[in-house]
Image 1 (cartoon, rainbow, N blue to C red):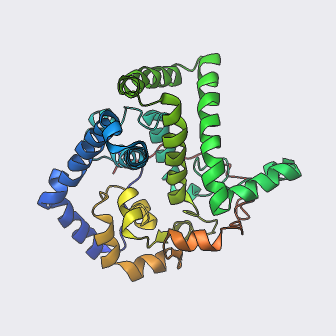
Image 2: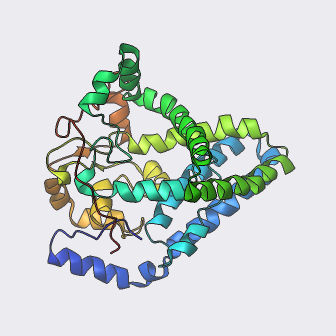
Length: 330
């Protein structure tokens, strides 16, 4: 499942991308299979041999593998490495990240792939914008917290707390209001925590330490990628960024910095995004009206103190009242 049909720049690009899909590398999905093996073996081995590695190196490796795992889950829900969603799901169910069930991430993210709804408050599930009504309902402290969250350090510090709060609230509401699908999802997630936490206990790697020293930085790292990933704009094509990040971030986020390309072609695998972007760079920058960032360092420097203006979406001050149809498969 990709979340929506692909949108090509022109017929020449369609033929080029389809030829790549027929190539040996893309057909076998070898890079994604190797990634799955690397993440699973790397996480379990790091915990098993952390005392030999040392606490700090092991912690840094676990932050990397857990963050990488969330990037992998994104690939899985977009139809990689197989054409069978249920099989792909099996590779992303084990909760190394603790706080996110695969099912929750999948359902919310696929709704996010309606480009007409991008940044629309209370419609786009990954939007940081607010309706006019909700913004005016905030008190002064709440508005300052939003603005702090819209700085680079604030995003790293506050959003892990918000994610943890979402998890506890979602579990509580699922069982309190007896939502069967959500109850099953959380029950499976909590059961799968047993082998993950059991592996930590077996090798004397503190569970509380893992939650604070591994999953907190992991959640913060994932928010580096989403920092100013979308902007409010009248034209949906102008709402999604191209971030020409360095190799470290590209590898960690599996090239999702080429976000405008991903939204147009959600079934292009992570290792194909740079190639597609480089072949059509000028066209993509014209398509998203020059929404270009020169790496995450640029965002950090510009928004170390000054927040990005992500408050009321002036194009959709009242949100979106038109219902959307279910996401399409390509």
